[in-house]
Image (cartoon, rainbow over all chains, first blue to last red; front, top):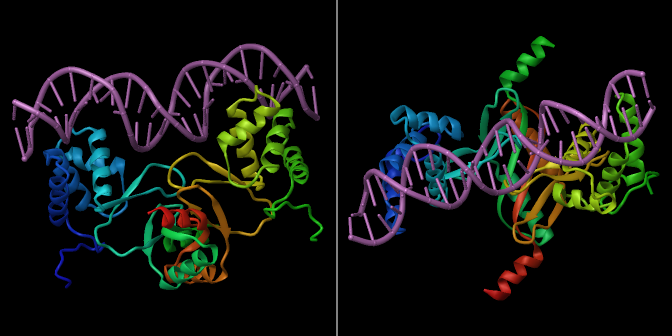
Length: 162
Length: 162
DNA sequence: TTCACTGCAAAAGCTTTGCAGGGCG
DNA sequence: CGCCCTGCAAAGCTTTTGCAGTGAA
């Protein structure tokens, strides 16, 4: 137990996210609305790596009239205040969002067949990155490290069939 | 000397690229055209990491009537036959192409201010990736590893000014 | 002569934006 | 009551595609 509410992804839960967003909204003179609450709830009660399309569907189960523009705008807000981050895998398809909060940095293994996404985090790679940046005089602020291929299940299926 | 014509990027030169593309074109029953030659020349005689926009400009210096569709189609051809590869940095902006040929795999450091791109390649990272893939049962076919931040020059400017 | 290629323009797919009305503080 | 937010539709961007005419082999 860490004293913070977390779900299976190690992310903050919907309730806490709403509190943090409220704080951000207040600090910026923005307004809390029913639609924003719906989006935040839908997002934080779902799994990680949610597509805009899935998110819109989830929101519309509660209120079919929420527009996609509002969902995009709310997710932009969540990204700005650090509660979510946007990802673009496969160099194609739309944006996927993942909860951010105070979660540790991580990278991704992506199955190109079933689109499963697994997170990983490796200190020796982070260390090597620091060395590379130093060698080139770069001041690195962020990075993206994605491994594409077949997950265990899809890899096994390939082997079985072929 | 390796016996192969190479430019400063370690990529094959325009002449050799044209030969290889001709071979591919012949093998597929396609046709060699003036426009394709223009695109290939423009691409291989330019630096690495060329945007579609820059490429189109370069091609049009020679023939202003070449359409962007043709440039896209030709670059797709070059990617298919392994002479080029498409990249999408910064999660925004358009596609950048880089010569591929028989060049060694590499990754990128990208300056978020001046958009300079530096290539790197690190065996210890490749090794760590293999270990991670193994641990998760993944069969990795490709990866993307990008470090974003300020290059030496921009980093120094920041420090000076602020 | 045949069939791939080209230029043009329209379409596609994702995301943002302008606007007029609605609602939070 | 002021101003932010919302839904809708239209616009933006990059890339692809349909089509009729052109050109390589």
